[in-house]
Amino acid sequence: MADPVLATQGLEVGIAGHLIARCDDLELATGEVLVLIGKNGAGKSTYLRTLGGLLKPMSGQVLFGGRPQAEVKLEKEAAWLSQEEHLEFAWSVTEYVSLGRLAHHSGLSLSAEDRQKVAEALAMVDAEDLADRTVLELSGGERQRVRVARALAQDTPLILMDEPTTHLDLEHQLAFLGLLEKLKREGKSIVVSLHDVFHAGQIGSRFLLFQNGVASHASSLTKEKLEATLSVGFEPTESGYLVPIVRRTTDYAG
Image 1 (cartoon, rainbow, N blue to C red):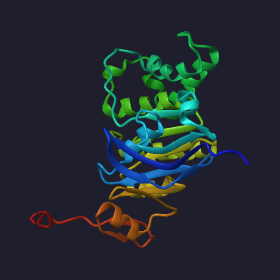
Image 2: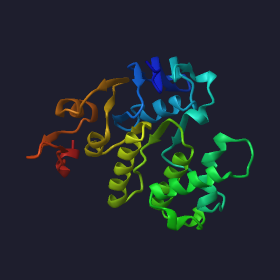
Image 3: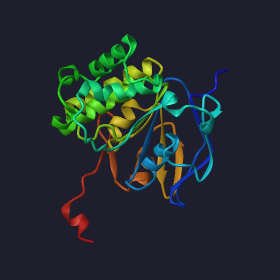
């Protein structure tokens, strides 16, 4: 039996010596999508950054294909898409997306395969028409799509995404969900944080819920679990979907 693409054992995550979350052990198989759900500050980004090697675990370990994190070349195992990125250089979009190919060779010149991967990545996010523009002149939504393309061009078995639908309009949010479904079918494993629980339920194979310093697994999103995790009321629609109950202004009056 093949080793899981990603596994964690006894993982505790935090920043600067401050424990943020104790996390259930994880084994993520090929083609699975793990969705992280929780309030801001609950530990989702810290968890992702720890998986990606940007933060050291406070306890426990992270394994890629059964090998400890310290023994692998991370850029070949996992592509990382952070919430925000400050772009200061006037790269063309093609040049920027090409940065994802640096994990596969030490030189700066691109092979024919590299160029093909870049073109495919741009097509996957509907950004071919942006190829010759500079990243500095893009809108927030265009820039986010291009950042996703760079992660796709890296062509790793695992993709880590922190709130990737930020800045995307509804059309491109839905297109992004379709892209995740396509990546699942192609065997990519994905760990992604999302605030939209409807989107999470549509795309997730399973879920990791962050609440009160603990990250616990869930195979489905129930009304009770969502309300406990997000401190928001939910009600089912006639079609069975859970939607949040909108608070009245007086609810904030204390």
